[in-house]
Image (tube, rainbow, N blue to C red; front, side, top):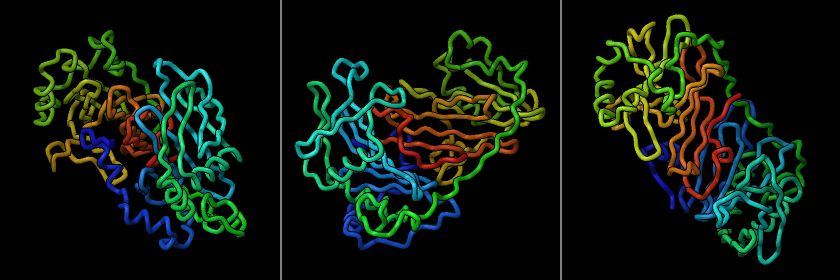
Length: 379
């Protein structure tokens, strides 16, 4: 079941295509010329029957399906030399990590996987093994994952359409590198991967005197957190946040502050909380919290909106700022396990916070955030 939480997932899922468009793509009548490889592309997401597919701004594509206790993820980068990978994950009944690799079963034939990347909840196939399993899934009628005495059924309806869309978008149609519509055209005819934005972070600056940069979610640090200036407390939206968290003494103290440069500070004000999500509003100020102005953080569909506009308050969920890397991250969890939601991060360039990465997982199937499909990335 797909989840919508706090209005965040809707941003990334709005581009999902209809069943009608999926059928057209699977039939091949929507094929277009190979995309240009000179600039980043617009991220796009589509639903193909029981599969969900995403290609990001660098044309790295991912398609996945699964169930409540397991999933399969197929990934394919852009460019002539790219090879697909297949990753599968399951939750053991005992709640612990996998003790042995998962087996992929397609129409009764078993395909072994192996561990990789230090993750204890998933295993993978790469190279020729991955392409063998992909071909079997595309032509198959029934698929499942097997681990010890556990089985998770996987739908195959939509996998061919998803991968054909990869071929089309990455310019692989009728080439030897295609996942579905293979041909005789050489790999050299496949466009290079599009360029993604190059974001340069501002130089790191000392945080001496800013004990408020400590972890606001660590109770031991709470008494060291910053005290908002009178100017900041006087902002109407900040007053609303302070009133909205007045029920919780800890949240009242969990204000953060960091020095961005000699004349600019970043202040985070807790505004709301739930069982596993805490929302913050961020303000840029002068020294000592003077002259506060709300920060709007760009997303893939434009900037966040200030508090009160069109029902979008512009808050970040479970945020954290790292002064060493100049990165502010947010992680809106779809549920407490953190296996679904939206993960975003922004880089401080010296003038503004610029989006550097966004990942979305709309299904709570046990996939760790490291493997969530990207909707935007940079270098």
